[in-house]
Length: 191
Image 1 (cartoon, rainbow, N blue to C red):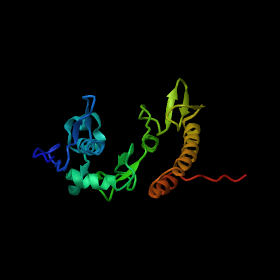
Image 2 (image 1 turned 45 degrees about the vertical axis):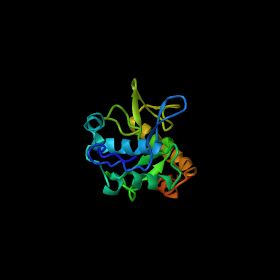
Image 3 (image 1 turned 30 degrees about the vertical axis):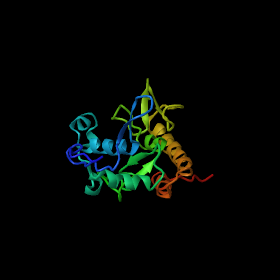
Image 4 (image 1 turned 120 degrees about the vertical axis):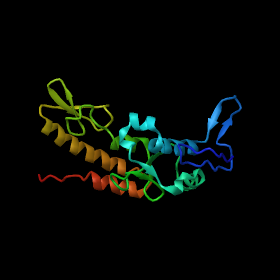
């Protein structure tokens, strides 16, 4: 039911239904689409989010998505269950969440695109382990060890491209498949 209070100063909950309900066991249940919308607004407009995740500081939401029902219409027009809302898959570096800039991706794809070493002095995908360097493209389930940063980075690039092409083959949205293959090209080596 419509609320006059703005969500994070910009969002309008214009839902024509209750986004929070009590289920038969007495537990409060929130509409998952509303949760996605509210989380998106928090990433862009909540000071606490900017403090903990400064990469969202300059992000915003397109005015059309200030309306929950506009956002909901976009979401239910596609397979959204369990998916993550991504603002910079279609346009690298994009800072605006909106119907023309966002895409839904799996958690696995989201995690694949965002791993970063805690040691920011090392290249993406490379971490230090004692006096060696290591790399992994599967979230740390398996590691490959090298003596130099360059060896680790070269291996990471090859492993990442191979993993991206496998991931691209199972995407629902063909735009995501195309982007994964374009961002992580397979390098053909001459025998």
